Image 1 (cartoon, rainbow, N blue to C red):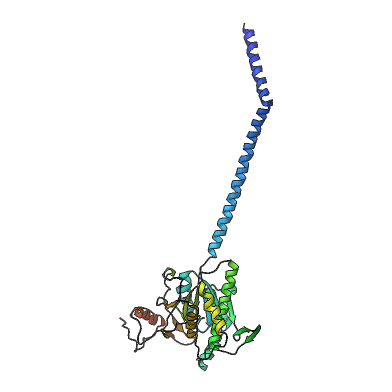
Image 2: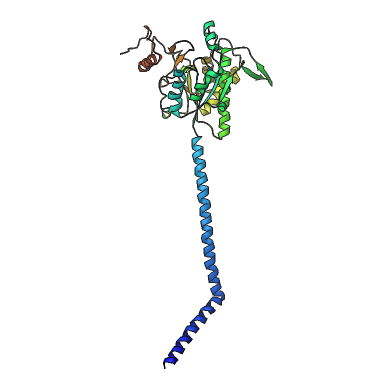
Length: 338
């Protein structure tokens, strides 16, 4: 009996073993195996897709981060005669009170010679002693690269009827021309980075800005803001301008196209701005939030305001100006200094 039971048990095991191999050999089971293999392939494909997406996302993030580092929205254009630009107190005030506050890119077109018709022989000799190497420290302090810099030489050049013409010195025309050279550098940078700036700042190399500029949120991009330094409230000053990008071509290019290198002798720089704003219907306003003071090379700081009738809201700024310039307020100033 025991032998029979053992035989039956062995037969059952053998039958089950044969049945298992039979199942493996059927088409249906082969299909099942293929499905399993396909699932495995699908899983590996999914992994490769996930890796690809991860790599793409990483590249996109790197691109976004690199774009953010080059996506400054403000360009500062420092244009004019060098004069006091090499003086530490001047270029540091531009860096600390404008560039750092607004996190701006800086461009410059600098003329080593002062062509002002008001310059005396003494002042002219002082300005003429400024050399190219004198600009190295202020350019480095403001992070102005060679791609962002123009060393102005010669007279104003203008293309008329297809011919390039160089004009003898005209202070106003030369001044506008230097600003054009600076603005061209800004446009070149916009081409390189494939993105336009939102604001352009016009500043001067011989001007110290003794107070930080207000936050950019305080300004609207529907007008140009001009710093009024007291020359005349009917005319905008030329010490500083905050220009929305949509008006920049008018401010720089259109004005030069209109007046060129040789505007009429009685047309001063500020009046060209008034005519431009009027003809182009550009809204503008003077802004007391911007504060400046001129520092002539070899001379003293000068606070540019109306001494006889300053606005009361300007009194604190005047106090700061005289403190910065380290000069005594004139006796004609009707403003209380406590």
